Amino acid sequence: MQVSPLCLGAMMFGAWGEPDHDTSIKIIHRALDAGINFIDTADVYSQGESEVIVGKALANGRRDDVILATKFHGPMDVAMGRPGADPNKRGNSRRWIIQEVENSLRRLGTDWIDLYQVHRPDRDTAVEETLSALTDLQRQGKIRAFGSSTFPAHQIVEAQWTARDRGLGRFVTEQPPYSILVRGIEADLLPVAQRYGMGVLPWSPLAGGWLTGRYRTGRPAPTSHRAERLPARYDLSDPDNQRKLEAADALAVLAENAGMSLIHMALAFVLQHPAVTAPIIGPRTMEQLESQLDAVDVTLTTDVMDKIDEIVPPGVTLARADNGYLPPALQDPFLRRRRTS
Image 1: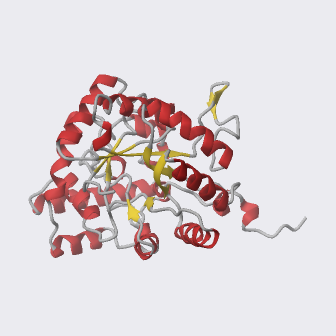
Image 2 (image 1 turned 60 degrees about the horizontal axis):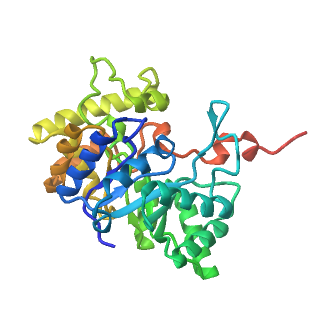
């Protein structure tokens, strides 16, 4: 499957971003008309509403022209006002995958999904079980290919070896966080993806809005639905986010001196990594989409790339909250301490 240099992310379509379906559909159609043939969503985005909107946008003859990707893993039930009360309506188990793919197909209004992705690792499910279920779906024709999202490099290697040893289909893509401010994957994940011939679809290439020019020292912090859902990534009292703010200031000056917008520089930086297939842009408005489309025509000079490396060194992620996944050993202290009693 051949995809456009940019992928349209649909996370902001629905209650999490733009609640008006007609407006969201117009944005999707504009992206398709501009040459984007790749759309990425997930079941958990606005609890299925994003998939419904994408399905509406691709009705009336547009489905065959699009590489359609979605994801599973996050909790999809809501009980007593909180998600995730039923442990069987989440995760990477065969039971949930077989059930949830049918829900996504229904919401998307399609008979097949081009790329079905595991949204996050699941410590309670062996990767062999996950790969086996996905292989069965692929053989049934319900999905064309499958991949991972925000997996550590060692788990990607484990999944590749398991697929080889058990005669199963393999992850053909990885969707990691990657931007000028979030460069941790350069150390190991990107080389691993290249080693196994995986497509890389970076999410949040604008660092969740930090690289749009809206975050600058001396200005009030902008409000957004994303900041409300993920406060740790935007709290300016956090020293990590202060470092991001200082870097965003320096990068804005660099972009201005180079004669381009910060948005174009940020997207071009991700596009120029040889391991990257297609960064995922996630506009909420038509204006945001238009500001990003022309980034595919921008090429950064060696001098600009070197200056970026001085501001944020290669392999460095300025804020841990931006990694998108916290390994179990960092969440449960008894996974890193010997029990003494």
